[in-house]
Length: 210
Image 1 (cartoon, rainbow, N blue to C red):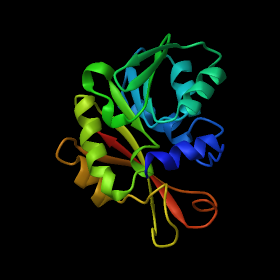
Image 2 (tube, helix red, strand yellow):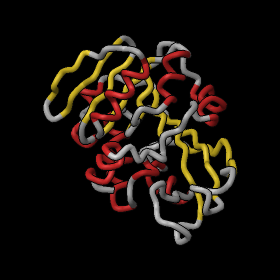
Image 3 (cartoon, rainbow, N blue to C red):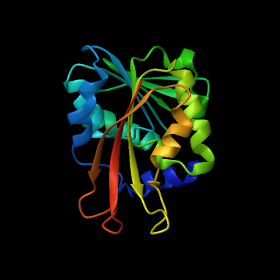
């Protein structure tokens, strides 16, 4: 979607996509990344997800990228932390102990600015982008993280039943985006209780990319 779409969602507090607890699939399958405590995990298009709270509470460091300043101001308020804010090119970096969030267009985020990361956790980025942007996004994230291993969560449903986001991304598409750079393992396929947005039968697919 265009940047204005997501900025408007945050401005209007229309954040249906924001969960009220850490994602159960993160909690169950994060260990499959086999990361030692203190590892730095990158969350693209992170919003103010409570997955960040879970990662910090469990001893991991977090790096994130997010378009909306509103989302990140709310994130740090809810963490109870006052961030240091620095302008880096076209991005603003919000930092505190164990966390760095880069606010702006993710395509403006370079490997040098992001710094080293040990893994990627993508629950909200690939599924948020239209098909015309997903290939570019996947290549960019792979590049700026130095091909870091990834825990990826996608939705699979009949896209004709309703428009995204979140968009439906099947196994063939995941292979198309990431198969050249990673070995892919499907860890789980879980039915979405009540259907996607209460309308369409859907599954969440958990992928491990290494």
